[in-house]
Image 1 (tube, rainbow, N blue to C red):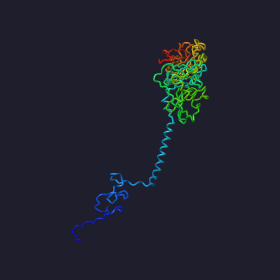
Image 2: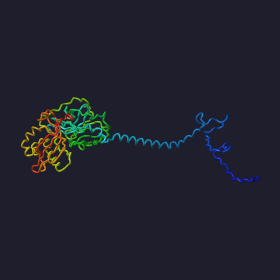
Image 3: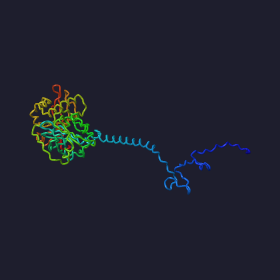
Length: 425
């Protein structure tokens, strides 16, 4: 070949893939073409090329099926993974549905739980209770045996009188609240008992009047009531995780307490069922015998501490009807105008609670003082000065003088009109 003067680099040979057919080698290669599957591509027939092995009217060749061994190799672990994850998720959902948050139960149902305070012939009248519709309250019958007067204290501190409708053989006392509690929620009964493995909660009041909530365990594995119930919390309701009522604690003592189940509570929802009446006490009734310590709503100075001590001793003696001990809190001057017989006539059925000292100040020489205290008293409507009422709220200023190195009550003056428990006044 003659040299035309142009020098070009030799072109590399064109490589043909091993899978290409002889026909594929014809013509220029200007684009990358997909490999044709011999089993699915068009084949020559007697009358020309046949239709592709795919959907009718489609020119797209169908994909080759996955080899059986390859399918099962990936499918079996996938099935196992799905089953494990599904079982784990089901277990988690189930465990969450059986668990209980005591804080949520208290927020949902705490306001439906009330303190029950009563003057009775036995002096046992302190319990918890649950408020249902139509003013019905269920509590422990042991707290109101032979009652003279009964009061209910709601979670917001309001006090209402209650009538005793009766008690039943399960130890449930049925009360009806006197007066209205606008916007105060009432408890609702659960449609059925929760799963035996589901957590339960108990809400009640202790002897100091503080509300509490406790895990009560499950029906299958309950906690001992003696570990979570105190003297002031017989009558406490039991709730499920949704705050629905499922039981009530009753009993004569904490040691003998039991949980009355849901079905035994159903008859008293709404108007309530007939129930044997509880005899009204005709004795010199006493209130609960737990010690009373007035709350200090002022700075806890030494003078305020002394005032708290003498007024607390006065209320303790009043509730125990120990009128000799009450006289020991009086000044010599006041003791001459009063005495055990006079105090018994005035306070023979009285029970004081929720005392708060709102003012304390020095007065006169020798470090004397004045102290102002508010409190609520239950008493018989036939008691002297009761004017047919069962309970009242008082706001009294006491003159305290120092005798024999300690403060004593010398005088008492009412600072406001006494308000009945049946009103918000």
